[in-house]
Length: 365
Image 1 (cartoon, rainbow, N blue to C red):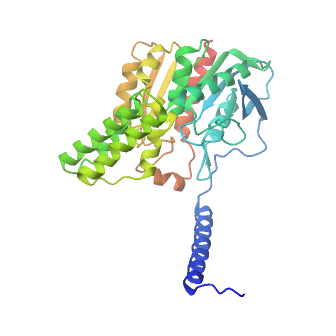
Image 2 (cartoon, rainbow, N blue to C red; image 1 turned 120 degrees about the vertical axis):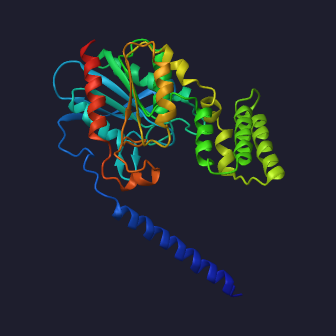
């Protein structure tokens, strides 16, 4: 028997096809509208580029190692990416943030290792269950790999971490001997829970005081539930109960997208890490940089905290960089929505500051 489709079904299919085609056209349009990325490294390059593999126990990690062509043992840097599913190049909106940074450092004489995070790109492992402590262990595996190479000086290997990568670098520097230096690019000096509360205060600054206080109380309760002892299932139940209660009592809407991050091992760990404690343990030279237009790791909150944490370290330097956003681009407002439209991938001023300081540290060893 021949089946006939219902007119409503045919209409739905036509609409679905139209939406798919419209979305494809929009993404193609956006890609065409992206400005050029003149800082992205392009062949021919004055240094060697090697695809490398190394292991953290049973987890295979892959990355790119750029090495100067000059003879001898070179100082080296491990680049540590920020939060999220970030590849070795820091690819976002056509920018390749970490590739640009690695290019500048390698031209200065550093070997630079940048790797895909576990479970991302060509690295194996499970990203969804990884924590900052796991990423720190992966960085230590990268350090061990570099120290086996005859073209790298094992006494002159530093760490440069961006955003959460700064926190990860601090974890490593606090406990691993022999780190030559540490650079925090938008690394937080304020604990994650306090940063999230401060963001809420900014977002609701124009709302009635009662609403702000309710929201802050909910967030504090969620943080406590997410870091409570017990199983993951027990913590998840507590977090969901808090959101349901807020919806029932005063009509606060919520979605699974809001709840889900607080149920992850990553957030459970992140909320318990004290960056100031870690920085006080770091015996190496430290350069901490925050752009004054950074809307993620705000300079107003984090610069004083970083200075306080590093006050006893005579080889520490903390800088607030005017006009730069979270990715160290020269920005108008610092909003994340600007990132794609900015031609500059990384401010030459930031690159020069990081490169000059790193060279100084390497020369003193």
